[in-house]
Length: 428
Image (cartoon, rainbow, N blue to C red; front, side, top):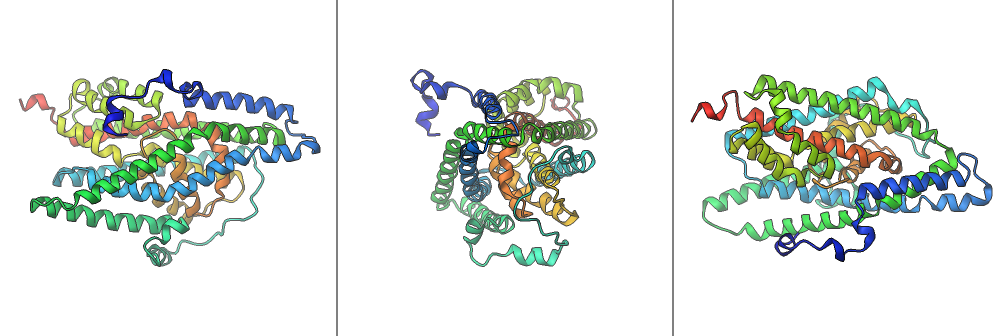
């Protein structure tokens, strides 16, 4: 958003009537209409004369998924570069911050995989198996290392190879960050044009992503109507189990955060929850950690009582990296789909999911439904059919809100731990 646009936001009254309806409400309306149409077309026993119509209903979802796959790799690449170029992280605190973020994200993914393996929500229902199957290859560390180096710098963008993409993004990000630091120390500004270009590219990808997200209600309508018409309501039984499993995992992750706050900071967990209530509610209602960011930063200082430096590192810097709820959700989604279609991921493939989800969560921009984009990379890394993501879209509007609240809670936990075991008023 340009400075002019941020100062003068568009008037809602001048927008078309359909753009004034919140995206969540649009999706709910699409769900209701889709169920009605699916029932009218047979509800599991469709007429052969309607076969072509039912098949064509999936076209919007297919187009949205193609667009998401196309946006996934450039989003992660420019997001990582943008974060490396713009984040301001002091030395010792920066190392602690990096360790905390990595630990929290890894724990979130492991919690998600644990819950998915124990509850096995994908076994509560069934879906038709895809034409291709997942190769049950054993974990080959040397093979992963060899495959991590691309044949050409831009090859990962074409092949959607997420491991290679991460290597390229990290290499360029670290080098550009180092060059920027050297030039700042020398009083030079040669890095500024590169930083500006990366910032513009990042904003451009986000804007295109917003266009695609605006089409999600049409995708939901098509895929739900087609599924209800062909299979009735049986496939949605396992989706209910998936929602329960994700909520259980998110609650466990929240308990982990409160435990860290209890034993690694001076903040009382109840004060932490009460003080952060405004941020949690905002995150749930907007589905955006970016929109919630200034509120999170404010409540950490005024209601929780943290130092400004700690609040800034967790709420402003850490928020660019810390998307624990998104990482947990993407890992669980991969395991859930593998279960629901009867192609279970072995230990090696689940480790690949862990690695991919960690970096994909960095590329998950703080806007609604952005996790759907990076999810395509997680699925591709273990050769899961991405067309099943369309089914997850039908419940993502709700789970997105829940995991965004957990993302914000993770940011606040990082700030509390960085603040140490002595409150600021004892030093005044």
